[in-house]
Image: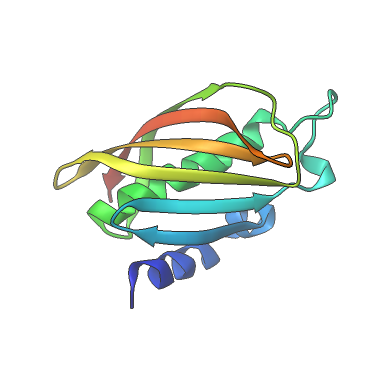
Amino acid sequence: MDLSQLGKEVLKAQPFSQYLGMELLSAGEEGVELALSVRPEFYQHLGVVQGGVIAALLDNALTFAGGLALGPEVLTVEFKVNFLRPAKGKRLLARARVVQAGQRLAVVQGEVYSEEPEPKRVALGQGTIAKV
């Protein structure tokens, strides 16, 4: 089974990710790419995507990237997110990659884009992923 197929199986086994509607677009040596279609209930009172939705997508992308280096049984130890601009549009796209990996921990970085008719970066993040 290739990395992308394995990633899709792992994502399918995550009820929360399924509830949100996350989709794994690619997984390989260069990193991962996840997408999320924005639903009306994801918006907050100002008409932009709520930060927790963006953070959940970013967390998953970071964890999946860490899993590329450490194997599929990984958890997030910590992560930080910087929100750069409000997210609008019909879909969010997260990209993440491993910066450094050892036997038990990986440091990962990622970005989230809003496709609003043209992609705009809405968040940056970094995290530490641990092998369970």
